Amino acid sequence: MVFSSSHFFWLLLLLIPVAWRVLSTERFLNHLRFQFRMDSNSKSPWRLLGRCLLPLLALACLVTALASPSMTVLRTGNVSDNMVLAIGIDVSKSMLAEDVVLEQPVQGELRPLSNRLNAARQLVLTLLSRIDGEKVGLFFFSRNGIEVVSPTRDLGFVRYMATHTDLSDLTDSGSNLLAALDTGIMMVDSQNGTPAQAIILITDGEDTENSRSALRKGIDAFSQQNIAVFTVGTGKTSSVHIPIRRKGIDGIDGFYTDEDDLPLKTRLNEQSLQEIALANGGQYFRLDRTSPLRQAEELMKSILSIAASHPETLPAQRLPLDLAPLFLLAALLFYCLYLLL
Image 1 (cartoon, rainbow, N blue to C red):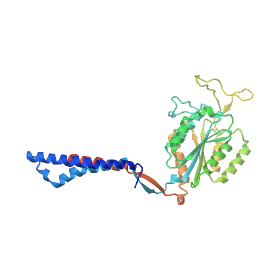
Image 2 (cartoon, one colour):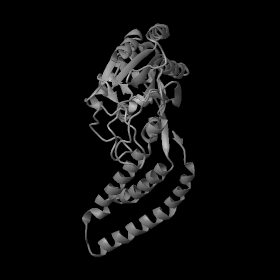
Image 3 (spheres, rainbow, N blue to C red):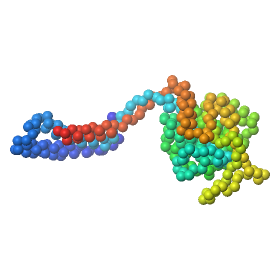
Image 4 (cartoon, rainbow, N blue to C red):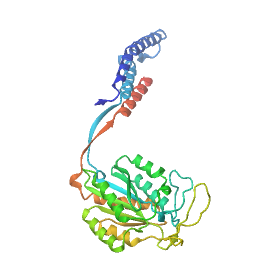
């Protein structure tokens, strides 16, 4: 047993005056009972012993709880401990298209816009609530991939970055799915001792930096990495315009245009995302007018099936077990017994 705040044990010196006080009080009460011939059970030595010892035991347990006792226990490895995830969110301009429906508020925003970016963030936050034990990293990508959070089990930090990062300020023209894959592979490969690896790309599937043949060739090259890639498509398959919104101004301030000053159009390219997932042993999901909770559950079920394929490498972990609540409960129990005697 280990005590992280052992200096609190100096409080055990209080047992001496408390013991003297309890004993003198019990003697005085017994004298009164004898004088008034009350409580025939007061002469029982067991009752006197209990009323003297129980408050001392309660105080001792309370002091021990303040000393923060803990012990190391061996926990059997979990399938989740085998998995490292790299979650990528597309932050290209096309993700500003408002052709999705948000079924619940995004944390940190009072009135989130129903655009593809906020739908992607909503899915990430829901996904994080379903993760238990996996290492998770977060990156954004457009024409290049940017690692935001290295794979970690500190999901609170990942959740904080996903919630409070203003994604609309990060949007850039163009998108490169091969760069996104490269960033995700680099992140999961940096982790040792996690044999199951997976990448999640949340995007509309548009790639402005690679030709169709180059994209196909790059997907085939990445398939040799043996890293599962799950793709989540957001948006409509029909073309829509990309609105321009200014901070502090209500409504739309025009639409993004191309070099010929014509309004840009964007749509969900499911074919590319399906090819990426199929070539890399993953699965494609469509995020459109569906609950992110159901999407997250289906996604995690598929991911854990990959982690379960490595049962021989499940590590046994030594974890600290906090014993302070047990000693607090014991102190309360001893004090209640003292009051009942």
